[in-house]
Length: 105
Image (cartoon, rainbow, N blue to C red; front, side, top):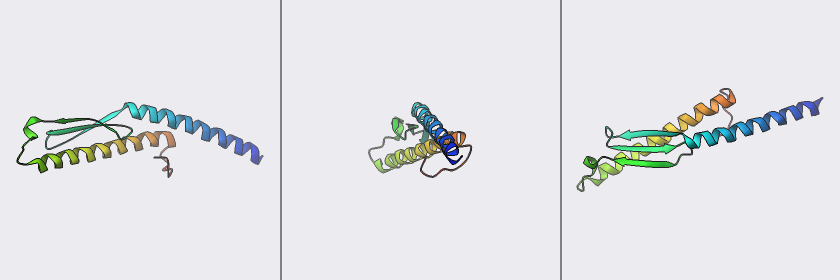
């Protein structure tokens, strides 16, 4: 009887692994956008936490204040990464039924 339970559990694990691989593929296709400075800098990231685009309003480029532009880019990148993490957690919640399983993401 223990072996039957173990076999059943292994099938469930394999099923979940397949679902996770599919979810990761789907996340890679999704993007999030975050902006800073009232839209002066906009960063787009995909579900694999890769930055896939940065748009900078020409008005944000001030040679006398490069530090402000750097801060806006940094803020937009950090916000986009937070949004990717939120999106990933939501998708993982669908897969795991809301259980927080350490090491999955």
